[in-house]
Length: 133
Image 1 (cartoon, rainbow, N blue to C red):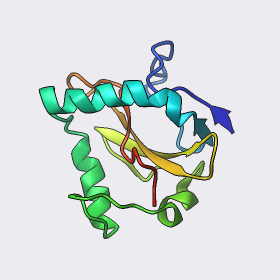
Image 2 (image 1 turned 180 degrees about the horizontal axis):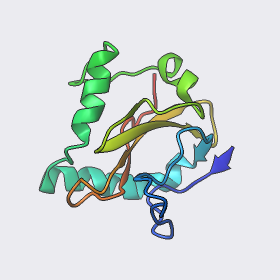
Image 3 (image 1 turned 135 degrees about the vertical axis):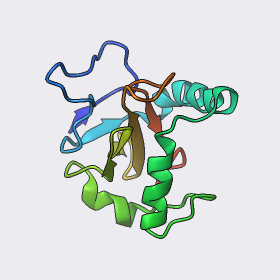
Image 4 (image 1 turned 30 degrees about the horizontal axis):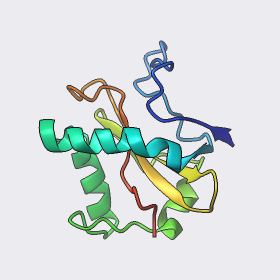
């Protein structure tokens, strides 16, 4: 498992033409408490500037997997098999990966935006701030 900090400005996109920084086949862990301030700022920017187009990819994934996009409720049971194996989705606008909390057995869905998202290039957003159920 590799501990990461989302939206670290030290990381740069891979120069091999790959659009994303995170590798969906890597088992990432995060310290959720340390992520809250930056993630809250991102959510505030959604309200001010509007959400990135990539959010539609998440809504499509929710719909395809019979979850509500109005009250998202993905479960650990559904996302755990993707942890360190494959993305939940991958499009030209975003990819959805599963990360695990450092201090417990909860999983989170993280959307990584591509450079096609004006104002949100390479932003990594925790979409399940309360964790998966």
